[in-house]
Length: 189
Image (cartoon, rainbow, N blue to C red):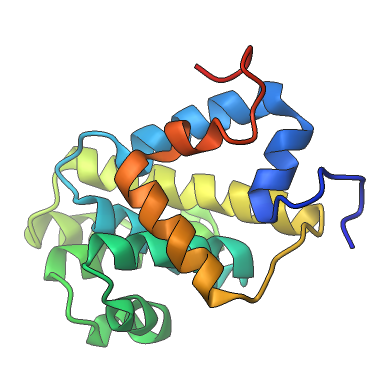
């Protein structure tokens, strides 16, 4: 049961955002830019970073929904998502993404854990400064989102099918468009 009275029927961050739509809009704008907007990293790569950080933070809702969006971006291949969560070093992903996930994992533990060697390794694997920046920001933002979801003890259903369907919708429409379902008209675009 959530620690505060959240709107019924909206699990995870959706309930928290519907509770306080004036804070939801900038959070949705940020996640839209980070995960769905134009970028040299593919949407599935960015979603895998969010999923990995959320799994390291043990946030069921965030790792499951972002894993579902990543899988939808990978033509439904959930095995890659599961492998990234278990041990990304063995996952069938690029060396660049592995280097970025190393950075993301260190940000998850604390930003000062990222070393110059980590950044050099990412550059050697082909990462640009923008990709390194965005990886750090995705990891930092998802630490905040995970703590937001879990700190309010939001409802986190275990129905994988629900996450798969919503993941397909988000992959297709983006975060800002999907958020309109629970934000009042004067707050949504």
